[in-house]
Length: 201
Image (cartoon, rainbow, N blue to C red; front, side, top):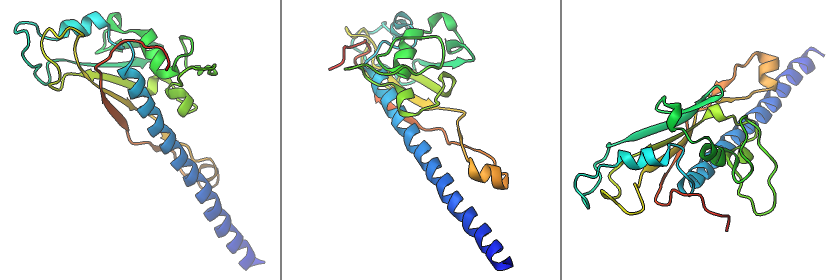
């Protein structure tokens, strides 16, 4: 009985550990898909930073000249219930952020992830259940693409990444006190040449 108790304890811990780490791998994969979809939506949607602000950040002193890398950078994210780009809420486009987060569903002012209807693009929250707006950061930065006074506006590099997300360990946390591990920040980068909302195709 003593041997059985020791063996069952070890086997149970091992099996539940496989389940927990398998779920952690699922969370990692879901987060990866979420940032890929977020970057794709960001590249074909109105920018989260006010479009006029983004356009004004492009220099216009020498028409046709290339844009110098590092000319501008706007980091847009939520902190609590308030969204801001570089700390400025006045230039934050909440509807554009909502489209990246929720896809083509109706914009709301919370972390809800509405059910998709026919022909609607999914957002980040549909790929990673439990994702919150505070976890998502969208950055628009100049990396030398485009040229001054470009007719269709600036060509920023868009980076979508996740922050402050923990892997959840249910069994190991309950049995062994195994603490949650912070998921490494993952990101997806695209070129934003078509920064305007487009209909589903």
